[in-house]
Image: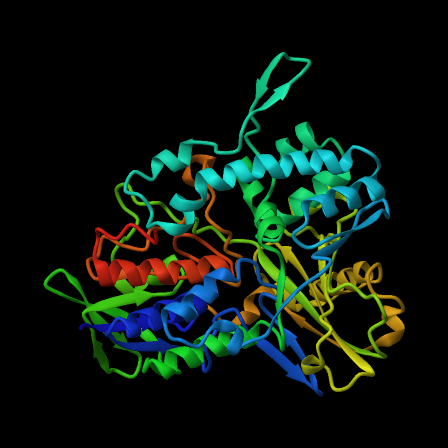
Length: 499
């Protein structure tokens, strides 16, 4: 079988590496950092531990499939998965709060009716039914198959269904997620709930296609999960599976170029002057970096053009708290922004004064992440405008203060319990995420602006993997990209995805 050189040790790259090794290929991974996992990192201090990347998992079946296909030891033998219930608690701008049960449509409908008033739950439940229709229409071409050569069909077709409008006596099709909220949910709190799923991926709901309705549907249908010990444990398990399948890892190995021989990718050039020859190259890096490594444009003449503009990034505050986690504390709370318009405008350009964004508060009940039962570790995060020097200045400290203020709605006595805090800006991840930008899952419609470049390239022998390639960002999508790339290399261009 062939030699495979993989650039980067992110989750998608490792997923591809493990599958290719099982198929009989000799796989070597070259990572310029000193560890694996990409954005799935951990910070530790004084006995406290924090996930600095994703803190929750949806669609665990993607990673279960990886472990089944790469050995007899299932995922649950390597990590402990715990369903988070409630999946989230939402605190809205008017002070109203609601806890949403995990993966229960009836439970969510009842909770929303009780918290927001009769009818709110049924409107959300009807929305989920329509979201499922969008999911069914796009699941296979957007998640389970390589990007079609005729991808413009996806770019122009809005899979979210039109909704009958009684007054107009006709149907009306929402073009954006914001229109779904305004026309169908008709409650600013339900709209905030809907839009929070887009904001978490750095998407402005005013321009994001209605097909983004699949994002809340995924959580509703497949549940929200926590990895005991932190999501970094999932990265460890995938890395160890790769090592067990004899994947070679080279850390601190800076790739400076992709070799070309006879018109195809033939290996890698490294910063130390060495060369790693290969029959195929798999690149788990940002499109801009890959373009530099190949010295050729990979998005010409019909390819999906990646959004190379600076993407919003994740601003994170890690909190070390004295005192035990109170009984009944919720794992995941979303504290919504007080000013929707100001928040959305701040995604595109930083204001002179920081704007309080929608804040996610993660409070895992996990002994592995705290020194003892008399302390608690908490992660606050928000998506903000692209990385800049302001994040590391007094402006960034004021933004961190705003996140802490928001978190007081989720954590009783927060300021009195605070021992110390650590601020992590979008650029602190040390990955190829384009200045710490958040990569969103691929979405249909929107004239193709919400798709990602295909896993194959116009440079034969070179493949893209990870969150900056099809099918986009997020832990489940990264795992899917690894499966697609492995299938394309093992089965060739006729590969059409899992059946």
